[in-house]
Figure 1 (tube, rainbow, N blue to C red):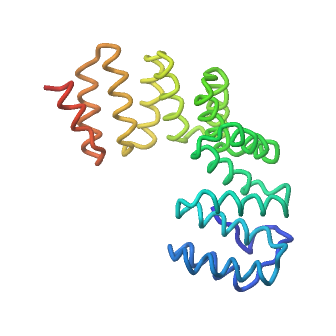
Figure 2: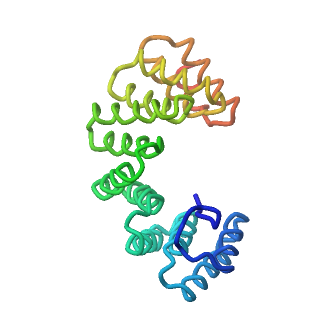
Figure 3: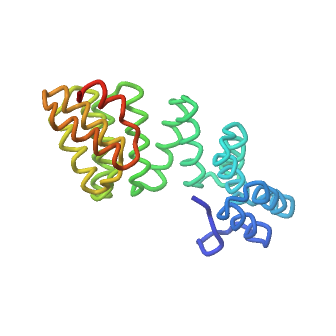
Length: 225
């Protein structure tokens, strides 16, 4: 999720910043970082360059440097929605649910039309064992983007983990209609079908997971002999 020079912005957009974006888009992260750093040296107030640097570090799995640079971008532009969103994801990955929630709520405050923000908030609330709040947020995501297979997948897992098995199967079925290549959705639906004594349907799901490249052999060996 990179910023670019065609977006409405008061941030500097020099050649180094453009090259940095192009390097990252070509998976040349080292040169991408160098160019963003060159842009920052020329324009220390360039929040977008710090964002680009943070995003690149996140792609490399360097969460410490990613958070540091997202934070600098936010320091320079307190309304930088994508920087809050990026930092929220890193906090969530690191298990820092309190900061992840604060950042994603700030994202929603700045732009309440981002379905992915509600998806993340639903996952955070789920990790905090706030099932009702998690479900409310994933429903908001679905209302914003009714054809999102990801939102229905998240909803199905939430429902299944809270023993609402029939509805979990329905949500995962909707997710799979929208994206029939999600092997993990087949596995989750299969495990929930087992719990409602639909062994035949479960085994069909495990086989379908294998067909789309998801490793489900252990489920087949355990439940489908």
